[in-house]
Each structure stands twice: as structure tokens, then as C-alpha cells.
Amino acid sequence: MARDYYEILGVSRDADKEEIKQAYRRLARKYHPDVNKEPGAEERFKEINRAYEVLSEPETRARYDRFGPEGVSGAGVGFQDIGDMGGFADIFESIFSGFAGGMGGPTQQQRRRSGPARGDDLRLDLKLDFREAVFGGEKEIRISHLENCEVCNGSGAKPGTRPRTCSTCTGSGQVRRVTRTPFGSFTQVSTCPTCNGTGMVIEDKCDACDGKGANQVTKKLKITIPAGVDNGTRLRISNEGDAGQRSGPAGDLYVYLFVNEDEEFQRDGINILSEIKISYLQAILGCRLEVDTVDGLVELIIPAGTQPNTVMKLENRGVPRLGNPVSRGDHMLTVLIDIPNKVTPEERELLEKLAKIKGDRTGKGGLEGFLGNLFK
Image 1 (cartoon, rainbow, N blue to C red):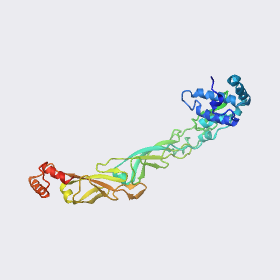
Image 2 (image 1 turned 180 degrees about the horizontal axis):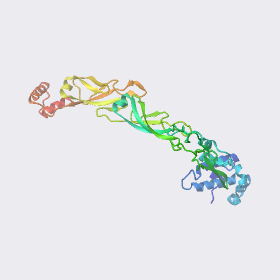
Image 3 (image 1 turned 180 degrees about the vertical axis):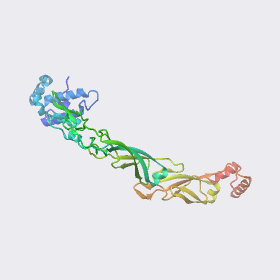
Image 4 (image 1 turned 90 degrees about the vertical axis):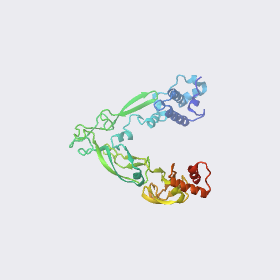
């Protein structure tokens, strides 16, 4: 059995003409085959059209309400009645920008094609050393981009001449083809094959750029790297992308930053992590020693009795906060203790005396056992 037309449009049987029109426009946008590529979308679209044909006309709707689908089996909407469908062609204009109702002049979008066009944005990946990312600074880069031709000032025409308006599209950059269907008249718009969408034809091309209006140029740039950048930070350099067309503005250059790993330091947010190895005697007795930081050597005090894997903090020796370089993270040092596998006879004798004094000699494990007990 055929589905109920009211059910197809999702409206009640007492829906007015405006409700039916709105339901139809919504469903037509959703299921048009040029938009919806799912299986069954085209059949659903035809079903929606048929339901609207019948319910949008008071006479055919009345016959349908009285006799069902059999009462309107031959009914259809004539071409002259297409205006009652509530701007059916407008649906397609909003979906495709390539359809418009009627035979009017160029749309606003079409007129823009022959006007200034912004150039393309470019991307550059840049690697930084660990300290460069921490402290920032100036960096010189090389880029290749399109620049307006200096000979023709970007027009593409030989000096002393100028482009003429394309006769095929009369300067709109597009050609229009009208198609008549049972549902109305639609205008399909495509790029003009004569001027390739520019709206202008260059008869005498500039020798310096071969009529393109721009040339590929490699140049050096100095850019500023902010302190505290990290992997994936993106910098935007305005107007260093490709040149725009027809006196349009240039695009932007986006520099993506990637930080090389460091042999000594690691990064955790705005904190810096590293390890320091000390002897077991330094751990037992305590000491002062210099440790390396991104700022250079700094004195660190190791308290007596420091245990393995103790984490010590050097405040404000980390990474500057991006956007607020006055605020810095900390440098976190993990203390590793070097316990020797072998000792000299003199060292063993002294350690065994210490073990007797401490009462830690158990006879199990010898020196290693004693040292292990020290650093439990």
C-alpha cells in the first residue's frame, strides 16, 4: 500500500498550506540526490515531491482526502503553478549556490568571482632546539610563495595594455544553463570556460609572469619565537601567504613549531625534569654541588641522609609561561644514588667498622646488605 501523503511530509491532516510548504522545503533539502548520497534518498525525494504536488493544491488535496491515492492518480502540478510551491528553486539556491530561480542577472556570489580574491594561506613546519623553545628569540626562515608581478602590478597584462571583459560571460566569470523540469525552471551555473572564472580575458600577456599576474618567489623572513612555546604551537605571520588575485589581499603564513628532544632535560608542562647521580657517601653525609639547568650551572644543596629517587625542586628555573614570560615553572631534579659493586680493601674495612657500630651487620648480604639497609 502507498504511504499516506501527510505521513510522508510529517504533518497533520488539518495542516494549513504554509505548514505543508515548510515541511516540504525542509525534507527537499535533506533528501535531494545531489545532497544525500545514501541508498534510497532519491526514491524518498520523489515520494516527498509527489506528496507535495497533491497536498499543495486545494482541489487535488480535497480529492485525496475523499478518495485516497486512487482519486489523484493522474493529478500533477502544471508548470504555471510552480510559483505556488513557495519558491521551490530557492531551496536549491541555498543548498548548492549553483542553482537559482529564473533568468535574472548574476547573483552576489557570481559578481564576487570577478572581484578581488584573497590569496591562499601557507604552512611551514619549523623545528626548534629545546632551549630555543624555552626562551624564544628571533629565527630566520625561508619561504616560497606567490608575489604580485612587479612588471604588470598583478594584472597579468603587458604594460600599456589591460585585460578586457570576457564576452562569453560578460564579466561575471560564470555561464548559466536553464533546465526546465516538471517542478519548475532551474538555472545551473558553472565556471566560464573562456576566462576560467576571472571575468576578464588577457590578450597581450605580461612577459614577466606569462599572464598569471604573480610569480613564485623564495624569500627570507625573520620571525619572533615567543618564550615557552611547545610542540604544536602555531604562529600566524600576516600577509606572507600567496598573493591575492585581482588586487586582493595576500593570505597568511602559519608556522607550526616542533621541539627537538634534549639529552638531559624533559618537559612537563612548564616544569623541566632531569636526573642527578650522586655517590652513596654524598647521600649519607650531604654535600653541595653544581647542577646543570637551562639557565646554566646552579648550586644545589643535598641534605645528609638523602634517599634514592628523592625529587628536589629549583624554583623558577623551568619554562616561561607562554604569553607571560615573567612567570616560570620549576626545575624538578630526581636524585639517583650510585652504590658501587666493588670497593677497595680499605673502604671495606671502614664500612665494616661502621656496620658494627650501627649494629647493622647481619651476616647476610655483606656490604651490599649493609648499604641496602642504609637506603631503605
